[in-house]
Length: 466
Image (cartoon, rainbow, N blue to C red; front, side, top):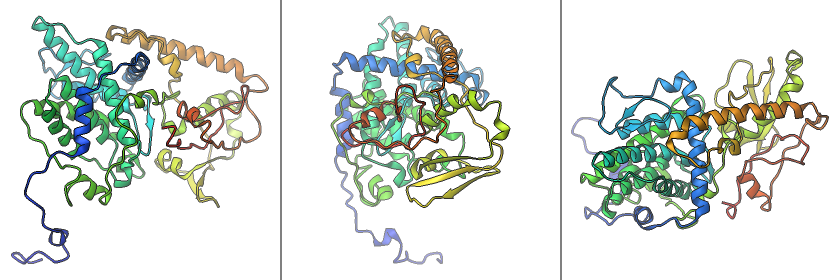
């Protein structure tokens, strides 16, 4: 197009209808979130107890991440030696940082091993990622209050905020597939964390709406979660969202403006720009549902691969002396699971489509090897420190490792029994609504009390179960 020439008639800007310059009222989604974080009171003791387990679970996984240099090199201040008065203390480290940087560091730790809990709706996500911003801001505010002679925040207040963050993130994820619009689910972490942090800082309803509207503005592409661009960003994307959430909440308290129709604005709003005009759907009002239906992980791997890794643990004692004899391993699974778990093609690793449209076969024609997890620990074991306090972080980590060794010893003794592993290839499991709740509790089930964990086709739970 030559300089000074008129806009082409085929341009989207030229063809769209005129937009009113009158500033609209806030989108209903923004108002619902603001009303929930400001007015809702958590009354159930069982929900608070569950939140305590989720907190302990996330901390145990975060402390394990400190063993990995790829994670620890991302931690700490941007400028070495920076001193922050009343800074937030990053668990397991000596860092005392501003709450935004601390949220990034702690968020990296929580997410690095993919060991924190997860919630599956139409969009999968990890609600415990929100703990990074909540705990770091709570520590900063508590130290600031104590320096001024005031009482610090109570852990009960932190747990209440964590419950609300879970609810917002999972409530949106239940019926809305963000990946369909090419949007990464760290958007949900940013929105949920921003709303809760704004309340923690004492924001008014309008300030919460402004902060949350800014959180909806930034949408990361989801390409780094899929081949051929898979990378470590997956492990710090939500940490970055938590860090930004702290900044957005603080900016709102200083008077930063919001964008009331960030979702519904014609052409440029999120619905039109990313989802072809389709508005978000909501299954239920915000309450205490999500944290009660989140799933702990047995091994540090994607939820879709939990049963396969458990199979590897049980199979290893029987084949470890005969690895060279293995010619080929075939795994049968759903195409959706393959898309999530099969990240990068390597030498000797090929995929072949099967006759069924809903399944694919992964064939390993070279020497077979199993990438077992470095840590193994059941959610019950990782929740041994149920009466949690910040000072028990190191103790929780020691308990986690001790329980891990005990569990491995038990599995080793059981694996020698004739009923330990079936020689026949297990058939994929299918689930109905009657046991879909059991799928929510672990993503897989046992065929009977003595049989091994089986390779199971991951089935999305029914709407009623969610």
